[in-house]
Image (cartoon, rainbow, N blue to C red):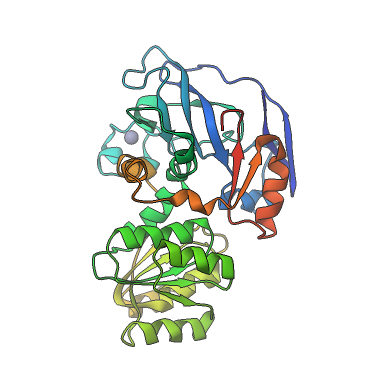
Length: 341
Ligand SMILES: [Zn+2]
C-alpha cells in the first residue's frame, strides 16, 4: 500500500509502505473509510517538533475491520469502528478513572494516513457501531476520533455546565469543535476568539454567541465586558503557545477553569500569577476513548455535525497538498479520501 511519510520540514511524501499485519493477538487491521490531517501534525511538518527518522503520519481514523488477532473478543471482522489516537486496554486502573489516553499500555497511533491500519489493543481502543453508517456520516464519525473528542475534553476539563460563560482560544478545528461541545453541554454564552471570517461563521453555526477578534489585553478586556466584568467561567485553550495560554488564563474569572488541549510548545507559567488568579488548570492528551460511545451516538442521531470542520477533501494521494493548505491556513482541516469514501 501507499501512505504518508514525513521526511523533514515541509517534506511529506506519499510512498510505498508495507501492508500492516497482525503482530500481536490483541491487534486489529482496519480498511480505513477516511482519514485526515490534524493540526498537531503541523508541528513536525513545520519543523518545530523534530523527527529522528522518516515518520509515517496520521492518527485519526475510522473504517471496517478486516482482520482481528486471536485474543480479540468484542471487535469483529466486518464491523465499522472508530478509535482514539491513543490506544488503551480500557481495563487498567487509569482507564477505569477515565484517562484512557494515559493507559498503562498506551501507544500513540501514527501511520493512519494510509488505506490500511494496524490498531493495537483493539477491544479497548475501538468502538463499533451496530450498523454500517451511510457515507454522508463518515466525516462526522471520523471527527470523533480526535478533533471532536479533544474539543469535548477541553470543554469537560474546563467544567462547562448548563448556564456557563465560555471563551474559546483558538479557531482551528479543535477550537471550533470546542464551541460545539460547550453548546452541547448547555453553555449560555460562548465567545469564540477568531479573526477569520470563514472560521467565525462556522463558530456561529456551532453555537458561538459572540466573536472576539482582539487579542492580548484588548481581547481580555472584551471578554470581561461580555462576562459581567469578571471573566469567563470556563476557557478552552486550543492552540498551545505562550500567547494562547496567557490569553486563556487572563480571560478566566477568579475560580474559573481552563481546559487546555493545544500541545504546549515553549510555554512556561509563572506560579505567582497562577496563585493570585485562582485558576483551575486541567488538560493533556484527550481521553477520547471515554467520550467515543456518546459522541458516536450524537452523530448517528443527527444531533451534531462535527464533520463540517473538513473544508477541504482530497484523495489520499494528494496528502502533500492537504498539509500545505492547512499550513498556509487555506483550509481548516483536510479530509483524505481512501478508495472507500
Ligand atoms: Zn488502561
